[in-house]
Image 1 (cartoon, rainbow, N blue to C red):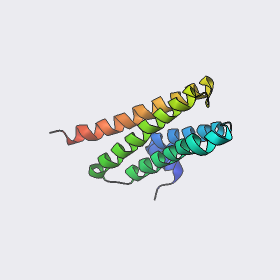
Image 2: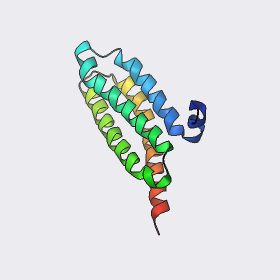
Image 3: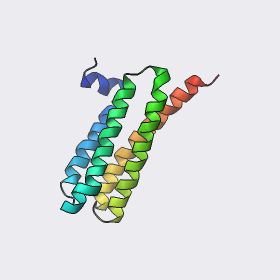
Image 4: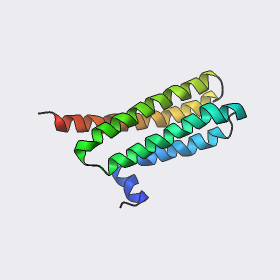
Length: 124
C-alpha cells in the first residue's frame, strides 16, 4: 500500500485534487446556509467522489483504469457545471471562483492526459 506522499509523487492529480478540496472546503463555510446544504454539499461530494475514483484508478491495472477514469471525468464535468452555477447565483464570488477554476483546469489537463495515454496504449 502506498503512502500519501508516494501517491502525491506518482500521481500528482491526487495532490491537486486534495488542494482543490481544501480550497473548496474553505469556500463552503462562506456559502449561505440554505446553499451550504444543497449546492455546496453536492459539490463537496463530487470532489470527494472524484478523488476516490482517482485513488482507485492508481491501484488498478492499466487495462482497468479506462472505465474508472471515464466515471471520474463525468463527476468532474458535473462539478465544473455546479461551480459555474454557484458563481452565476453569486454564491461564489468571482475571485474564489477563478481560483477554484484555475485548479480545475490543471486537474482537467492531468485527467485528459491520463485518459489519452491509456487510449494511445490501446491503439494498434
